[in-house]
Amino acid sequence: MGGPSIFKVWQQYYPLFLSGLWSTLKLAFVAVLFGSLLGAFISMLTLSKNKIINSIGVVYVTIFRGTPILVQLYIFYYFLPMAFPIMNSLSKTTVVLLALIMNSSSYVSEIVRGGILAVDKGQTEAARSLGMSSKNCMRKIVLPQAIKSIVPSLGNEYIMMVKETSLASTLALNELMFVKTILANKFLIWQPLFIIAAIYLIVTLVLTYMVNLVEKRLSVSD
Amino acid sequence: MTDNILIKVENLNKNFGDLHVLKNINETVSTGEVVAIIGPSGSGKSTFLRCLNLMEKPDSGKVFFEGVDITNPKINIDLHRRKIGMVFQHFNVFPHLKVIENITITPMLELKVPKAKAEEDAMELLKTVGLADKAYEYPRKLSGGQKQRLAIVRALAMHPDVMLFDEPTSALDPEMVKDVLDVIKLLVDHGMTCVIVTHEMGFAKQVADRVLFMDEGIIQEQGTPKELFENPQNPRTIEFLSKVLY
Image (cartoon, rainbow over all chains, first blue to last red; front, side, top):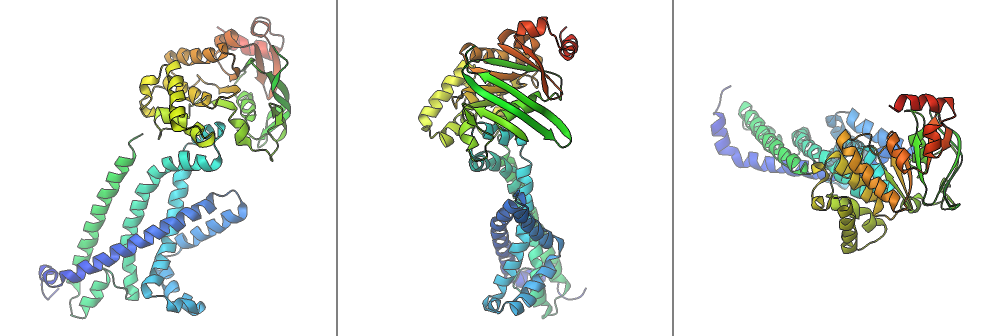
């Protein structure tokens, strides 16, 4: 483990790490944001009583949760542009984001589905017995209660995604993990790895703390 | 008792898997009538009650409410449910809404009652059941008995023509039971049509115009409380009453 100390490397290259971190956070945020919107839609499919609609949702979730995200990234990046030439016009970041969004949506859809199913059936029965329409019952009674378990889980999904975006470095996408590759050209091998690990750790700890705060805030009426 | 039929049940059948829970039931409830349904657990009495507002979908047969066949899939069931209040064993108050919002939400959403008017009505209802001071609390601050009284006025806020009670006191601590029964009694005294599934024999005796004894998915026997409790004819009724009356 020769060469300059971790501290020296940090001092000299910290803007590089910080801009890498910024890209990582943005990437994860956009992936989870759009993943959540798509995921909420997919959960409606998996909750549907219509068999065809339901199986479309289930197949989608099964595929994206059942295969490694790295494989999904490679397929999106190398294979899909060959199959669909229109994708060649998309930037690398967009293609990576598409893969991350679809991956994230499969997890989010299960989070949303679980949150909705966890609301006591008696709540729906009470609302419907009063003559509330099924749409209003979902909007005003079920979802506000489901959200309490959904939002903290979405926070955890964001934390997972922050770490998983590191896989995009294998496609030379500029994010935190890619700093390792940049600095390897300057014969700095081990120091950047430890710095990167420390940054991921700090970020996930801070985010976990924030998720816990939100969770507490949401449990006010319990 | 009037001949003004409010609910009419025709050849009602319900299965849960292989279990035939309701066996070809025919029954009517008249306006202003108070009907108590008693019977052992699993006799089908709750399922029967839940078929009256289609919480449970019958496998065959018809349920007429105010002359309309509500089992007809073409009707909008929500419109009819607004006229049929239901109170559940486990209260099912909305925990994320304040006490007063529990009452106002459905009238505001579905009947388009203005907020001020809905809140005024809700406060009036809360006063009659002694919960006015809890209006701006969340239900978690209420006892079981208070939750059930809230559930009752929540249903009343829709101005129903009939109230269905599904074992309204079965989940309560013993000392809470009377408060809830008092509220139901109050409704009865005001002429509300009620169908009450209950294990409170004393209460059934006191408030019901008619008592139905159900067992094995059939209404085995029915009559005035006096007839049914003091002179039961059906051996099953006799056996059941000998076990529950002390």
